[in-house]
Picture 1: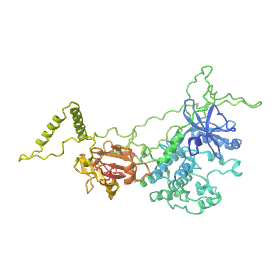
Picture 2 (picture 1 turned 90 degrees about the vertical axis):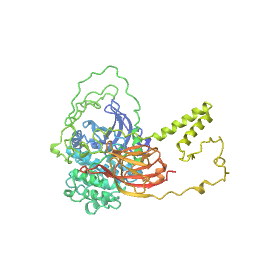
Picture 3 (picture 1 turned 180 degrees about the vertical axis):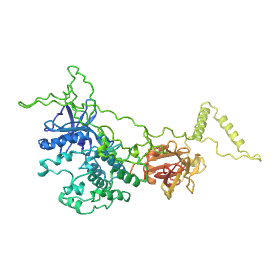
Picture 4 (picture 1 turned 30 degrees about the vertical axis):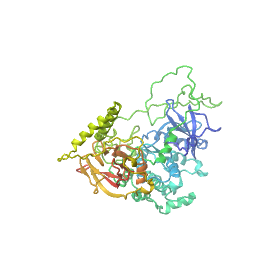
Length: 633
């Protein structure tokens, strides 16, 4: 359960100043800015005493006055404290008994999926697959805690740098029982409801799977699967008509169509959703690179990470507060209220005639770290039934991404292999630098003529023919400063127009479906591009499974990994300057592209298509390569 739904745009739009009707503190938390507002209440930015940003959702007074809402809200908060998934925003504090209920979650710096699509358009297929797989993992732990989200929609999914975060789970259930539902307050978003939910029938975890399919279609196309318009029209289409999947990429069609089945029993389980994502990705394990989002969306994360500091800092305490012993975390038992630390909120004075309510201490409990588990072999994804869900800590089910990875080129749970890329040959460049230094020293010492004559004599001896003649490989006569090329060659300057001598771009040569085996290389200057054994110099691209990286072999070879969604071309590769000479394969996803420029001037575009299966007798990567020879300019 969470309440963070920040607005899109600049930092001034994301972090709105507090208005006259906004409180300055909530139960000891000083409010720094307003993040947004919705049908359930307002969301504010605050900080824990240790300085961590949190999002605090203050429930609307109308809901707080409803006894049934309060009962369900307290129940959902207790359940939400058991949700400790990687793709959810954890609930860290709440007050369900105060005059105005509220809850606090970890602040997630990132735009909502709705804001990202409106501002930048639909996401690439690879990003959608990682999005849906992460949301499916979030639903696994949410359902394991006995919660059905009921309101899974793009505005309740935040896009963080390390994956999505599902928020606001359980609030729809608490609000569904209030008298406000009959007076114009709609619980749930019509465009993302399931047929049984729209018809008022029983809601189950399969309801969230239907919404997950709608979110996938929206992320891939930018439009809801059942269109827009009045709520009655949208709900009718959800119950009686088929979704409009025009524009959904072919790789996502099976996943989306199965999730949008009218019959709840026909929809896939959470484990099957993740398997469908893996199949569509043509990989045995989904690997999430650090830049899984398109660059414009990632830039929005940076804006939201610049959270403003509180308007004023708490005054220093007048006396040292008594230190109470730590309280063990109990997710099913609310923390005992106590007096807030000095400086984190004014003392609460109850109105005359009202029973005093103990003030709330922000961040009062300490979460116990989950026990470290030894690495296990990869095993099928098995959801945990709600009846077997742990009351605290992570659930016992193992995801494929959490199992130990031993396949070459894949990330292990501890990160990439520590084997560094092999050192590249730089012999030719070092020799050239040494000769240049020797020449400078000779000139400074006044012995230029002698040095050059001696060097020329050695060159003549080395190239002397058997008949006693000699053919020098190059003119050793020093050129005069300020002389033009035409004067040095005995000619005259003809004033040739550079534009007239410009050569057209070479035609691209395509080599699809190359299986590049570990330790082998591709020599980009060869007419028939095929893997060769060894890692010699020259215009070569080498794949090393030990360490799992690509290496631009040879002098002055460079690589550039393009951003997700960026389409490579000769012009793009020429313009890119984010050079490196090695790229780890675990930073690539299917369809990701790499620009290659060799020291001799060849340009190539590599499109990563996948890794060899785990049961393959050899380790290789499959790539498509397009080469423009002598095109580096």
